Length: 84
Image 1 (cartoon, rainbow, N blue to C red):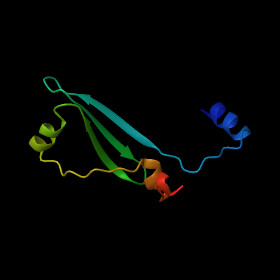
Image 2 (image 1 turned 45 degrees about the horizontal axis):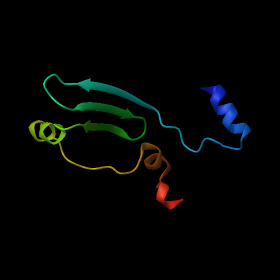
Image 3 (image 1 turned 135 degrees about the horizontal axis):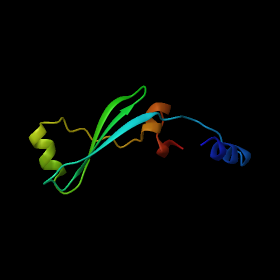
């Protein structure tokens, strides 16, 4: 990774924010969806469910629905890409 960072730095780019996360991917048998569990340093835990059966799974698990439109980087940096 440091080689890539060095190459980008040579082009004038710099690190603005670093996202450190641990992602667990789940594929549930019999369900047409994937579940991603993210633990993001300084932000907390997030669940992402993608696929045709996603809404049904959210209902069955009684998860609180909250759509987050900003990326982890945006949340950590306190800005939105649209602000740039």
